[in-house]
Amino acid sequence: MKRIHLIFCLILSVGPVLVQADEAVQYEIDAKFIGCPTNEASTVTMPSDPAVLPASWTVLSAPRVTTIAGATAEIRILKEPPQYFEKQSDGSFRLRQMGQQYETGITLKVTTTTGSSNENVKVDHQVTFCSILRREPLPGVSLDVGLPTMTISKHQFSFERKLDAWSFEHLEGYPGYNNNDQKMLLMLRIRRVNPKGQPIDESGRLIAE
Image (cartoon, rainbow, N blue to C red; front, side, top):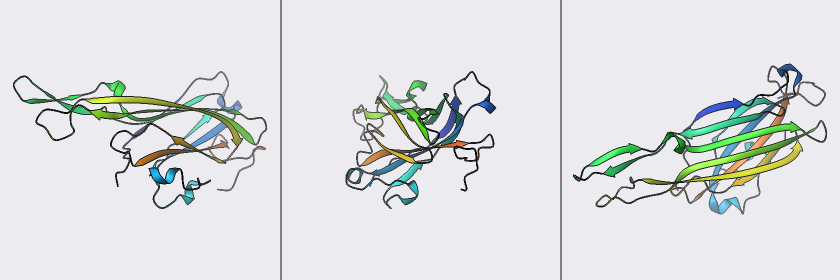
């Protein structure tokens, strides 16, 4: 079985806000990108906790970042732009690389705000995929190493839910032409935390891990 391979660096950026950090509500964003067989994505009951995933499902990446209410946290899970071979007029081949705008992988942007009650949180997030759709064939070469055609897809989600509860979403359009038997899923959990990064309830009391 082919598998989705994510080999990543993690970059976190938080947009500016016009409040002091110690006055703002702080949230911990816990994200899990999960690969599962395509035929199971629509037939298996979606788990409510990543700790009880089916044996054939794999957590590909599990970034976590702390931000403040109203700010946008950006998580980039990317690989270098793809390389390819280009045939020269003399019959030789030259190795080239796509531009920096074609780093392949996932960019997740999450904005959290206080919900309709102290127990809830509003979440707006966007997932952007950049992946290889196909490659141009090279005359006389059996390997799939020609110029890539890239595809970029975006998914926007908004919801309100209880703090410390996992959301679960299907992500279409990734990871590309060589992983057709795999599907990408995203689980998100938002928790309120104190300045030390410790989970707290709506009244500010520490929550036992």
